[in-house]
Image (cartoon, rainbow over all chains, first blue to last red; front, side, top):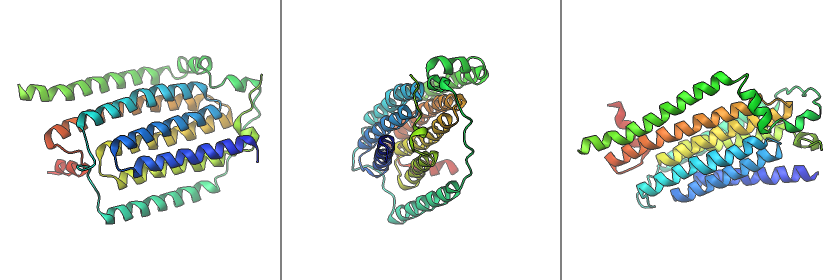
Length: 172
Length: 109
């Protein structure tokens, strides 16, 4: 077994373990903290795959922005273990069964998937995941989706502000 | 310095396919298993991240950067989705004092 294989296996196992803890831990704050750990482990996987820009963006956007948003809302709502909604035992067993069957089906379908070997790539491969290369691609080939995503962001921002504000007008 | 990719050192693409499948299934399992709407949103983030992981793995495998930009756009969509979803959730909590996902059943009538 090579060193890379050991590192990848350990990282993968840790990622799956912490993802499971997100679902299984009872307290919502603990779930959020496990999700942050999961995102950091996924970032480690990205670094292992030479996707440096995506790794940094993953930390900034997910672990930095989105998870802070989740934690903030969680603190704001002040949820405790007592008013945590619980599902019935039947639903839990059904969920576990459905998840297991879904994994079985997806894994069986992907196991024998024919994956064509990649073309031989030259030494330019090392800079593929860096900002320069991705930026060039983003502002030439993918400039239209980039602009559309900015419209999506504006819409989300306006929507969030509007949703938060409407309640204020009712109380006035 | 030429960096060898992880796939040239014995780790197959099938390993990352298995890992991404497992993460996606854990996310789907969480959506069915939990009734707390915030954790449901977190499970959706988990599923999006499973897709991201597979996209990055294939991007490195084939040496093409396009998939990494798709990951970038998925992150944009995930951020927008989390913002709007959480603000709706806060509104529901203000009205019903609970984040139980079954409250959304009331949207039917």
